[in-house]
Amino acid sequence: MRILQQCFRVYAEEIEAAVAFYEGLQGVACERRVKIPETSVEAAKVGGFLILAGDKAHLDPIRHVDAIFYVDSLDEFADWLSSHGASIVDGPRSVTAGTNLTARHADGLVVEYFEAGARPASPDLRSSPL
Image (cartoon, rainbow, N blue to C red):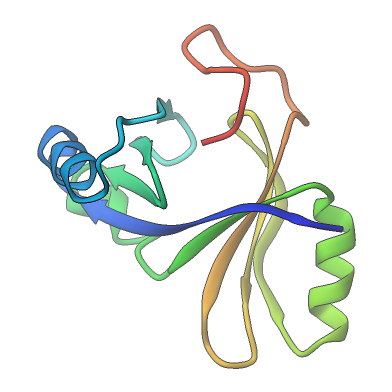
């Protein structure tokens, strides 16, 4: 059971400006971009940030999530979280390129836990998770 990577989630109406800002801030290029059909949101991973862009109606239902943790075993994390005072807010469920769940930690931090690979990628997705 390992967290492979973690990112802050950033919400933007316009993805190009947000990507340019976070590329400049960190001195790195955007690693991946994908459209997420489940939420009608476009996502871009830039260094330590996952930018989620779309209109207010599509962003408001997910805006409460503070971060994303890419993990090696969603099942193990679900068990660990439940036994350590976190509450599972949503999931686990199948999503673009994998499975996820959203948990609220005992201190109030809300995190999406994502495990890649549970579902085949569509042609516009890359082989690794965001």
